[in-house]
Length: 377
Image 1 (cartoon, rainbow, N blue to C red):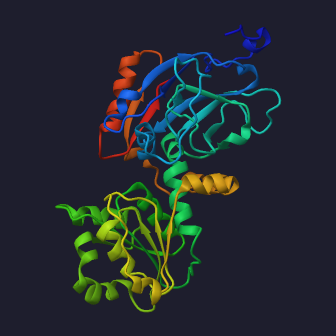
Image 2: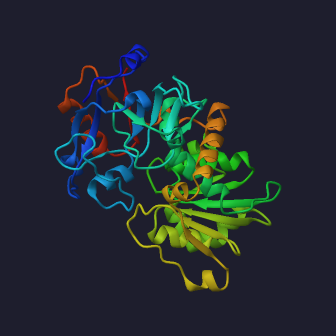
Image 3: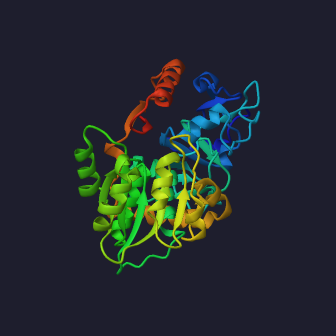
């Protein structure tokens, strides 16, 4: 690497390093994707004329793991620009950064700003990143770093699922139904819906502590009513109990499906005339099977939802969504996920390459709460 411009080195922030460490991969492995990762140290060129970012936190999402496995539809381009032996890509789609350097020609960002990537495939599993154009970034204000690190996927998904497809009547008895009611997206949907006077029926798996979990979803996150999957699938429940839950003149306008299989079929049967069902996940790995009668006689509109595709097709909508959701976090109207996630700390100054790889492997393989890597600076 050629030496840095002496004028540039005079103005380098004390928080900035010219040596980056990134988790990279050049191949894929469906059986054990942790095998394809390595920690690569390099010195990017052209930092004087780049926006330089210091990583604050990044989640380990299912889509990140699927990319390492080689089965995700959206893939970053592999390149030799990092100085690796084989064409490689930096892992990670989502994360939050602190701006530590801006070139003179960048007016919209300042050192100290907190930003997230506008689009996926940015390569967030890194100590630092750099980019040439501020349009690749979205400034986030008013959030803690865990909320900001997860806003592009969970926050934007929840907001767009609720608001981009259905016209709601805040003065009416409008409802949505969602399965996987304990998921991060479902919790945000419930909170957003309550703010807009939309009622939520959340379906969760049968469990020993059902009443405790249901109470938390209703009292803390704003779900109107929580039911179990066995209730969701029960004909007697749907016929005799559900009408009393929904009340008179209920309009069940939206179904949110991230499970598939029998859960999605039972969910769809509860939807009203000309309702919409959005499938944004398939946790059961079972197909979505819908009776023809729902399409023919009830006018069901069944669509797929992918926030990555939405962002590519309408980047401005992504920017607007991030700002709206961030403002709700800032105003205390949305609960930050910071106390629910499993935080994994990466100390770039003291941890060996092997310790970092073991930390990330743990985050990839450990189930339950969402794993978020926070960097200790």
